[in-house]
Image (cartoon, rainbow, N blue to C red; front, side, top):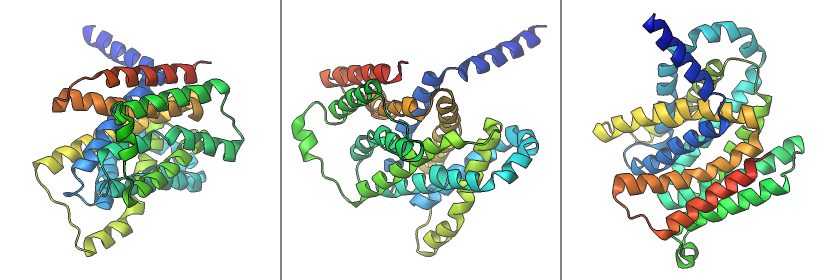
Length: 306
């Protein structure tokens, strides 16, 4: 009897979680904040294409036992919508992550976090181009407010730091990657009717397959993976949190509230990145952190209110 109650409680909690879009989107941003910092950290150990391939193939291996029965049931939909699923896999998994990891080899984590903050604007651009959606005045004000908070955090409350930020070719790769990711986010509106685990498994699986030719060329060029404790632990984090859980939560959050209302939560990435630096790296909590956090949360609140 007790076992039955525990199973029912776990099921109820899982259902509750997947009906909380803002919590899901916040958790996705938390996982991606770690991914940006980690991607910069392993830049010298793991080449970008190999890192993306390991990320998606590892996540598929973890997810497949849970998704197998849903894949069998959804196979007619998968076969019918193969072109759309391939496009989503290419934009949301293969191209975006590989280009972002490549860019992080030539830029700083600060630049990476700073550039992430323009993603809501790119999402708004794509939803307008594709579907003629317009940002409401409230959404625009919220995005601008939270963007200001991001600048305060990343630039440590100093205009001198902001003006001193130097951009390079790595930043250009990241901007292009974010444009592609924003396209994926906007196109999730056309997502086929299938189980979330099926959709995620197909997307990550195709994303890994699309990377195979490029990875072969990368290895042929003499860029090999360095396997050590740091690399293995990085693989574990990347496969589980920003990949499997991050995309599962993101897709569900966008399904519930739409792309434009979900996009401002990307501004939480630098917020969580700074929190991780304070907690894990011993950085001091400063006044600019409090100001930046307040602006980001205020902006998200304004942008997501109906």
